[in-house]
Image (cartoon, rainbow, N blue to C red; front, side):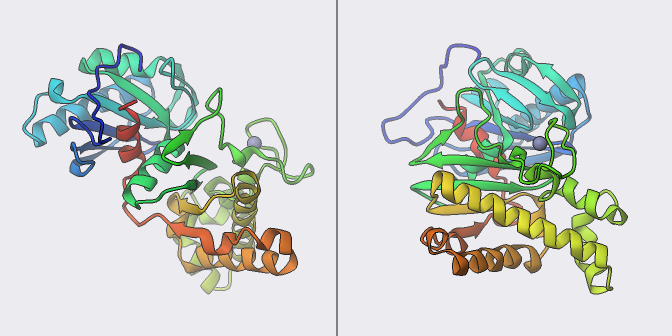
Length: 315
Ligand SMILES: [Zn+2]
C-alpha cells in the first residue's frame, strides 16, 4: 500500500467489502470484482497498450467498467490489487523491469491510486497467481505455483501466506543456470532454465513455430517436424527440472502448473509427470518427495492472478 490501509478486516478472514483484482499482462489486462465472500462478481478483459500511459489508462478503464457492471461507484471498492510482470517492491508500490508491458520503472501503485482514489497494492503476477490458485483450488499447506508461460517463474504460498523474499525476487527460478555452456539469457547469465523451459525457449529451439509456438507445436510434431519434437523434449525436461528445484527447496504438498504452455496438451503435462517418475525410479532420495503425484494443473480460463491480487490487496 502506498497510503494508509483503510481496508476493512474481519475476524473471520472473509472480505469485508468488495475488492478489485487486476492482472496486467503483455497483451491483455484481466480485471474482476471479488465479493465479501471471495466470489467473483464481475469480470472484464481488455487489450493492454504498451507503455506507462497505456497501462495507467487501461487500469482506470477496467476499474470504471467493473464499477458500472456491479452498480457501484469506484469509491465503493475497498481496495485494488494489481498483478504485474517484473520486479515489484510491494512496500513502496514500485515496479521495475516490466519490459513486456513497456515499462522500465514506475511508482505504479501511487499512479493508479491517483487515478482511482482508492488504495492500491501491487504484486508480482506469478505470486498473485499462486495466491489466487490457492483460493480458487481450495489448497492448503505448502504450495508452489509454477508459471510455464512466456517466461518461467514460481510463486510460493505457505499456510496461506505468500513468500516474496526481501526484495521480491523469491521464485525467480527461471534464472537458475543449468548449463554454463548454454544460450545467453537476457538476465546476463548463460543457460538459465528459462532459456529452455518457456515460450521464449520454444521460440529459440523452434523458430519455425512463429510468435505463438505452443499453439502449433503438437500439430507440427504430428506432421513429423523433428525440430518441434526437439523443442518439446527440452521444454518438458526443463519444466521437470524446475519442479525438482521446487521439490528440494520448498517440499510443496501441492505443485500447481499454470501459464499458457500448460494448455498445449497432454504431451507437456504427462511428459513432465513421466520425466519425474523416471527420475524417481533412479533416485530414492528424490522419490521420497513424490513430486510426480503432487502436481495439479490450474484449470483453463482460471483468473488466478487477478483473484490473488485482489486478495493480497487486503493486507
Ligand atoms: Zn536468466
